[in-house]
Length: 128
Figure 1 (cartoon, rainbow, N blue to C red):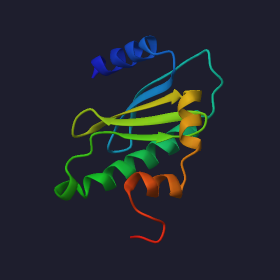
Figure 2: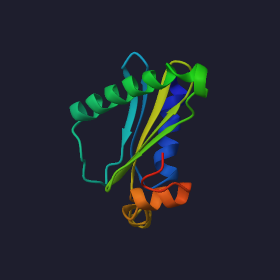
Figure 3: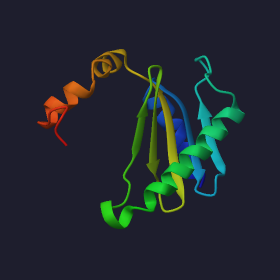
C-alpha cells in the first residue's frame, strides 16, 4: 500500500496538469490523496469525498454489465475546466485523477452537436 502513496507523488511530479489524485477502495474509503499546492482548489475535501463516492458507485454499476461488454478499463469525464479520469488499480481499488482541461481539446468538442454526430455515423436525424 505504501507504493500507492509514492505513485501519487510521481504522478503529480510527472504531469503539471494533474490537480488532484487519489486512491480509493470500492468500499468508499479514501486511502491516499495528493493535491497540487500551486492551484486554486475547486472543491473542498468534503466535496471531493462526495464526488469520489459518486464515482465509485458509477464504477460499480459499470461492473454489473461486464459479462456483456467486458471489464471497464477506465472512465473519462471532461468538463470545461477539468478532466476526471478513473482507472482500476486492482479488483478493490480505483485511481482517481483530476487534471486541467486542455483549451484546444475543449474548443474541439464545443462544436459537436447531433447533426455532426449523425453525419459521422452515417445516420440522418430521421434515421434510427
